[in-house]
Image 1 (cartoon, rainbow, N blue to C red):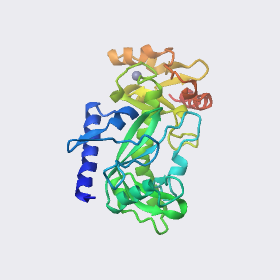
Image 2: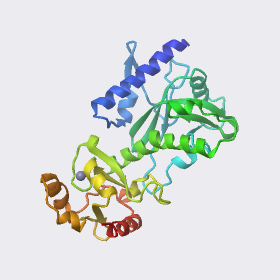
Image 3: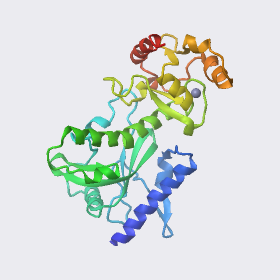
Amino acid sequence: MDTEYERNLHNAALTWLDDQTRIGGGFRLFSSAELREGFTFGGQRVPLLAPQPGIWKPRHLSAALSIRTTFTPPGSRPPYDDAVGEDGMPRYKYRGEDPGHSDNRALRSAMEDRLPLVWFWGVAPAVYEAIHPVWVIAEEPLRHQFAVAVDEAQRSVPLDGPVTDDDRRYVERLTKARVHQPVFRAQVIVAYDQRCAVCRLKYPSLLDAAHILRDGHPRGDPVVENGLALCKIHHAAFDQNLIGVRPDRLVVEVRPDIREDHDGPMLLHGLKEMHGVPLHLPAVRRAHPDPTRLEERWEEFRHAV
Ligand SMILES: [Zn+2]
């Protein structure tokens, strides 16, 4: 197979995803149906996703084009844990245990040709966040897996020697920023039906996933039960404890000193009038905010002034 042709096709796939994301105002999720439909290259339709989970190689190519991690429903163990090596770099498991399986050979081929790939992460049933570009940079046959760099800077990290704490923290930070945070954000926004839980604003590009227990807290994991979909203003207000969520009634509480303040329409309508408003919740009960995490966060809010 002509490597140059494959490289151009991979780059065209990334450009197509970028264009779609730009049209979506920076927030764009993909359905499995449209990814299987794919994009057009050289007059030919190229699907971006396999009909079955795992590694995807279009029939006329020799290297894989995308890999997929399926959606983990709320309440189940997130796939992050075993998908990250001790060095902080993500790993992707073989298809089965045979290194000679055609899918594993296709991914090895992408590694050897240093081709950019797409990593699709399920954020709801049949809905994906596209992390791209990523590169397969090493193979670990004994563990039946490949190491995947999710950031340009991770491509030059040496994986075959001991890693220092500083190196590991750096690699972990990149993995978090490039994979865990966008996947968390997408999962939470989708769970909340693309609306702010406080004011119900429905512009996904203006929404964030706020952590109930902060990133770095022992239970501050990037999982839907620890998240709230909030617009940019309410995210900042929640982070700074200007607003809180009453865990017993699931209503918004605005801090007393803010309620007594006077300013323009943003303070009045955007913050003060949110006092007592019931939280907009996910349709799926298991995606609701975890009561014990809300309790703990409420204590922090009550003591903040
Ligand atoms: Zn809001």
